[in-house]
Structures are given as structure tokens and as C-alpha cells.
Image (cartoon, rainbow, N blue to C red; front, top):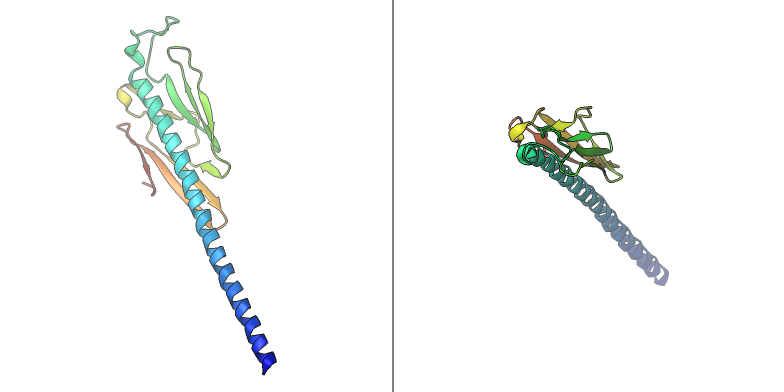
Length: 164
């Protein structure tokens, strides 16, 4: 009788270990999803902010007395955002000959369509020259996180979790 009790104790330990491993596995899956969501949310916020920056500078391009310091006439369409697969470039020409910067996305984040040469440009008053939806996404294993930056004809830049 004593040997059967020892076996039962060993079985209890195995059940407890299996339960602990199950809990750890489920927490790791949830943590992976939270990580993906946080990274995609950050990159989407950066992209929307840079788009709004370029839009605002195009709105006020002619505000510097109509000319830049090198006597070039100020026009709209001097600031734009050009997209690539893993990064985007903010370009422009402003008061101090602004050349722009390139934002490289986190390792696991990608930009979906549109990948075009022209990029996001704005007209006078902030209206968009081309209506577009930029898909920001990340995928790790079976987990996936998606955001969409939508630019409409009126120049409104918004972020959504669902495609338009």
C-alpha cells in the first residue's frame, strides 16, 4: 500500500507541472500579441504625425513672405512623405533648406500599399493630392497586428484598425 501512495504523489506533481506549463504558454502567447499591437501602434502614430507635419508645412509654405531665403518662390508641395517597404522618408525644402529624414520602422513592422514614387503630397490648404491608405502591419507566428493610416481627399489623416 505504501508504494501505491508514492506513485500517486508523483502523479500529482506531474499534473501540477503540466498546469503550470499551460499557464506559462498561454501568457507567452498573450504577451506576444500585446508586443505586436504596441509596436504597430507606435509606428502608426509616428507615420500619422509625420504626415500631419508635412501637411501643415504645405499649408503655411507661402507664409514666409512668398519666398525662401534663396529667393526661390515658396510653393505648396514642398514637403512630402515617400514610402518604401520597411521605412518612409520625409522630404522637403523650407526656411533653412530642410533636406528631410528617413524613419526606419521597427524590425517586425512593414508598410503595405501604396509603395509609389510620388508618396503622400498635399495641396494648398492641406487637401491631399492623392487619396491613399497605408497599411502598417506586423506578423509573428500566428499573431498579427494591423493598422491603417487613411488620407482622404479633404486631407484628413486618421488611423483605423479596419481597412476602409
